[in-house]
Image (cartoon, rainbow, N blue to C red; front, side, top):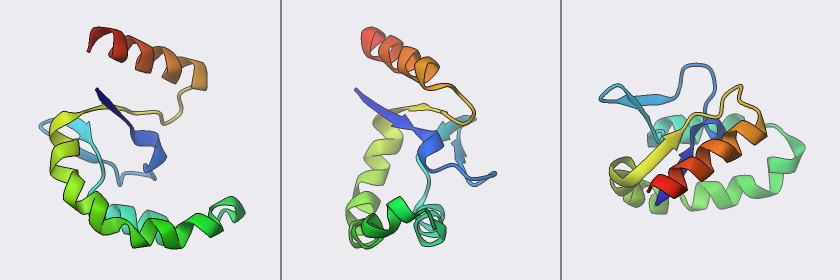
Length: 91
């Protein structure tokens, strides 16, 4: 089971919907998110993320097909953990 925590990439309305459901972000939204991330703790990861966009792009169709998306925007960590655990238990 793959669980995609959508709040990781969500900013404003740049999350994606497929068939009415949230889906992993497309490449343009992800590149913008990486390029505009100015948090000091993200500085070292920026180049690694950009270097691995091709891997993400190749995996994207599979992620969209197989991932269960959990929108974490505005959700407390304990609630996210419960949602993930429930998803793992039910498969």
